[in-house]
Image (tube, rainbow, N blue to C red):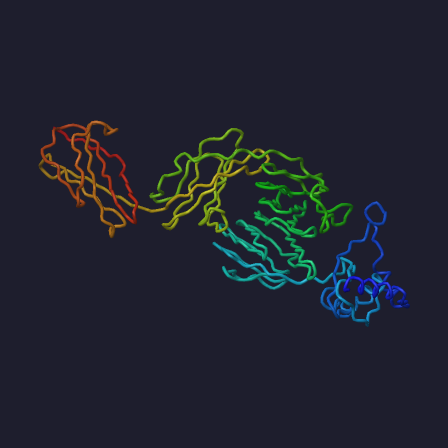
Length: 469
């Protein structure tokens, strides 16, 4: 029977001496000492043999060094040359396991985005490129880039940011992923797929903190001027530890639970840490604010939003993206008042995310709204005809290739509540009003278009003129 055969084979193998080379290899597997000086328990991964396996083959496939067959022979009391039956469970030291390099795919870029490998010069980065360990990213004003990792996680580097890919690999035997990113400037937002293996590691490191997760959405923002790092957690939980302790890296090792972190920051909380100082205490993020007119079509010369003022907010942050998940960002603006003007933007459908900023500099929970940018320009003018009381009104509209109807309103009051003339369904861009009595008049033109199943309306500013006796 296979089970009994394997047990008998292993029992016999245990009687075989490993010799001097086996003793030397065993020395490499001795437990390391922890921070307190006490020996930490060694960590092993298990491998179940297939019929005909040898330690030479196992070491070549799964160990960092093919010569680690000697170490496996000592640890498991198995003679290296022998072919093993199926079903034997071997111990492989986790720190010595082979790791294969992974790549990240650039899924979105906007504005100035550059990358460089190691110490090479920076070059423009385009959507569709692949990056790996050693690559450095840099974004300029209104520059954004989003990376997709092999497990479906995403990282978005905001404008004026610098991010290095320190580690991007997985353990060949177990599939455990190791992903470490160094943030040198600006902000990175991460949407991390939930870890499925105990040794999965995902960390964003700044000069002051290490933020590690097992699966969540969070932001890390490093300000080099003040040397502070802000962490904001939108979903899940983030373990925050100092970047260094006693002059050495304090980054948690793979497999360390988040609960062992110096600070465990949960969803809807954040913290701010100064370089060299203690990890900041968790602070509750401000609630998501609301836009004043979220359904308004952005048809003006600029794209602008008004935010309903929020309690305890010292400012607001608004971001525009092509997608609701904010992976394809195109604009990012911070304002101190509840009004944001982004300037011009091409026509299309977008999403705007708005959050309140507190006195700690932490951006709060966001609201996301879809909006349409469709610049519908409408210019109008009026002039009195010479030697008459007749007035001639002219107007023209952009998107002239779309069928347009016009409405003309003339009234004696600025609110146009009691019109003297209200003409609808005007096909052209000209109208003459004759024999107007003397007085002050107020007027406007309304353009109406029906395009791709949607109704659009744009009014010119209310203007006035005085008709003398």
